Length: 213
Image 1 (cartoon, rainbow, N blue to C red):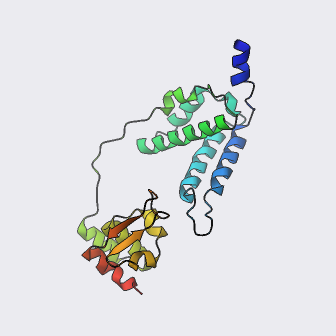
Image 2 (cartoon, one colour):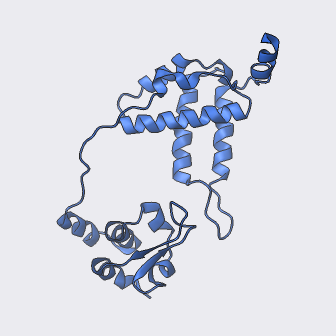
Image 3 (cartoon, rainbow, N blue to C red):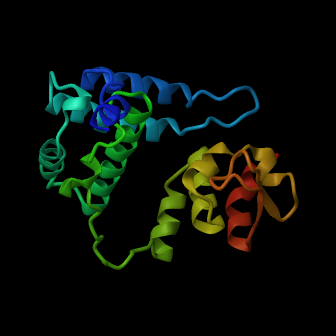
């Protein structure tokens, strides 16, 4: 039984340098940021670049280490070295490492029965319950009045239309003005990949009207 367990969990694992595995992982994800004509990319390029930055830092922390040789204390030490960032940012870092370790298992660089996810460093931290702040009307007006061109439209679409930044950046003027009284966020441009219509309120209409036509 022990021999069978060994063959099933250990013998299939390939020894892969951590830095090489990270490079391979990042290259595969970078390919998903390129969209086919008329399609939306599978992954956001900013998100992929941030993931690559985190993992490259992780790999440099343990130069010469194979993925299969990673231990819980490696994970703990890396997370503990990021005390100057917020708890939310550390949780994002933890998610990135967990995602990478899962990919390593699928690539046979890490045994399926590894226990790295049990590391204390990968435990999700509770976030601070600080109140969420917001722009006051005079602050928003100042932002709009001191911006110009497409930037002004993007700010107005977010603040007065409730669009997410990446959704606003994906829109064309046809999306904004094609349906009277509404902005069309198609499934290919929506974060949730579901089409929706955003009502244009009076204030939003006033700020985007100069761009019509």
